[in-house]
Amino acid sequence: KSNSSNNTITNFTNIENQNIKSKIPIFIGFIDYLNKNRWGKSSLGLRYNNITVTNNNSVFENANIYLSPFDYSEKVFASYINHSITLTNTKSITFGIRSESSFIDYTFSSFDANSSYSNNLKYTNLLFNVNYNWITKSQWNNSLSFRKQIQRPNYSYLNPFKSVSSDVIYFSGDSNINPAKTYLTEIQIMKNQWLFIAQAGLYKDFISGFYTVNNNVISQTYKNFNTVYVGAIGVEYNNSFFKKRWTTKVNFDVQIPFQDEASVEN
Image (cartoon, rainbow, N blue to C red; front, side, top):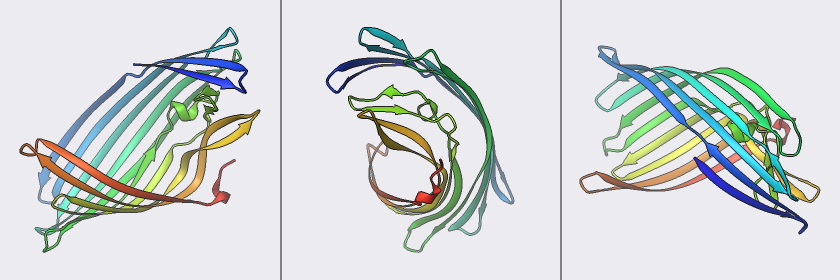
């Protein structure tokens, strides 16, 4: 549960107050099975996630009250299977495949008009991962992986009506946003407390925001970008205390995206 209040003054004339009360219950269920056989180690399982968002927005502007509630329900059913093969004492490879089916229902209402928008989204994505692990003679643990993941649009991305964000920025979404698909190659090198990571990949239907100015008010809106390339490097240091019951992590990451303007969706 959360309760927040935002205050906005536009051109020092119109005072707008927004109160937001939200309830977001989350339910997660899963079942897993592990089997060791002569071909290696196999694991399979089922997942169920249920997220429900109930948001009661109230805006007070010039002695008028505007209501803008929205209800959002997201259900995700997933099944997966992984198989790990031990090649030698220091080398192994893992293959995995995962199917996710998403069911999203939502209703949004506008602040300043008696209008609302409802929609139902249903899509299924087939995901995968391949991971190769090896240990060098100097005891460096290495991992090279290639995987596909998705980023589902949430209620903030999908809400098409403008809401107060700060004293100068309003934000709204786009009800037609598609889930983003990530294809990522990653290498990890670890020894003792140090972990080094390098990534390269691309996003299809990348979800991001852009800004526009209308009537001296800055608005942020989310949308899809067709293709965005990304490269990243990072380092992490881990240190354990109290017989490894408490571990601290310090990390530093640099991520650089490359996006062609021609790939922006209208």
